[in-house]
Image (cartoon, rainbow, N blue to C red; front, side, top):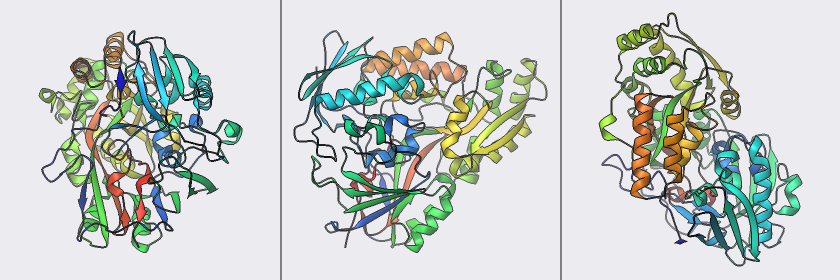
Length: 516
């Protein structure tokens, strides 16, 4: 079976009449940038987290690392601005009739930044390196769990043998954690990497990485600028101030900055892109910690949250309330909307029925952005239901590893949209972001969804069955559906074309340029 593209999970999530395209809406006082991008320009883009290291297989948070990796590395596949799987280093791929082997054909003429060819032996070396790291990696393990072996079958062809069918493997291979590194630089990839993407590594500081255009990249039209500077600025207000003062050209605006987003939309000097996603603000629960191991207690926590008030009072009405893991698209079940309307009295009744008094919950949150805004509001709403939420702040780079290690009871964060919705299940419900482990029912339903063909009616049915189960007996507490907002000066081009920007908060900035 020949495969050219899969539709990713963010497709079909245009939820407001004002949104004219799933690739995003431009809101600005004047018209968007026109003209040819200046090939000598430098684009300065700010994200929420500073760089930690640059070896893709060593990532502990691929969403935070995505911008730093995707400018530098190509994978076999990628995800475009609309959430569609696209070919990068792979020209095509086939699934065998028995569904236990994928064959990838590489495009001609691609090279690493040290000019060595990107052939099947180099790709196999990368994938074998990732497989060796996967058992200790919460990021790689679910993506490569089905892979038994990787073999070079010709200079431009490789085969991936599976333990069991995995229709989502081409989507998993789009992960920035599986970008291709020159094998000669494996040992130095964390600090002085040699990559395969449209920009090559130039320098790194504590809060910034600088890249220069790679002139021999296989698609010469991709890199629009001479250089790209990606800086990590955790404080959202500081990012907006940097944009207004001219220190950066474009950045991410999280929902806690709704007033700033509105102001920039009315200013002709700036442009605002809004992309609906399937990301969901979520309170992650460790279900191995008593009494959170009791489904009645988890239901009580769901009733304790006032989703409408959070969206309207804190987020400018921009975060659509939901109590489902998939707010729209595959896996969404309309009849389950408002299953957990705010009801503190009901929460108290459920806690009493579970035999729980004076419930105390230890939680962690990010000391920046949306999580920082949500945490005190959740704490106050829990208190109304008789729940004492004790909160500790941590850095964006540390928060998921800390929760995955099993320490806190609760994490204020978000389910990140995935290129394949089955990956949402693998990561958030039966994988690393559910350290308490899944029940056999949930595991079986997740397996059924993961193993059915992508974009099939069977996959949609399986995802909906999973949703029904985790709403009836919740694992986490879902709050609201998160759109992505990107803001930039009126001279920045390509903001509506950034790969991954309808999927994850942090985009691939390879499409950006600057008009003269």
